[in-house]
Image 1 (tube, rainbow, N blue to C red):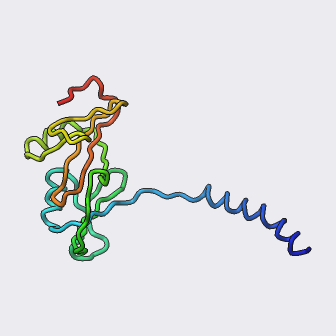
Image 2: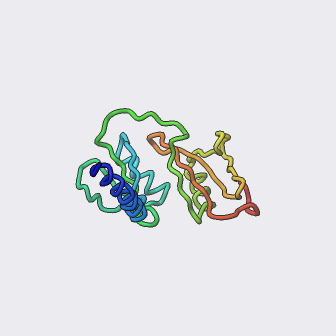
Length: 158
């Protein structure tokens, strides 16, 4: 009987502790990593096409290169894993920029093919909320989605 009373006393307090832990529990986005075949080719793509800044690879492992994104997040390119990666458009990197038209112009100038979500070449998708989107692939076939910032319903569609 004492054990049952003790458990009845303890259960509400366990729930309180769990609720307190959940409210203090936070997860933030740090980085994403891509398995690449040719580290130099992929690094050149993200530097030259995406205009990302390379940062120090704090892992100090050969065959890995890091790039800075906004808000302290990072992209890690990893060429040390040799297994093949199966990629489809639903697995993609979604990025937002305030320079959508600049990036689009750069893709055209550098002859990087892009499309809308259904895959229509050289087409910009405009979501219901007015955000412009395009999709293209990096040298390893990873899909990249670029979104504009804010309402762009009055902008050119290209």
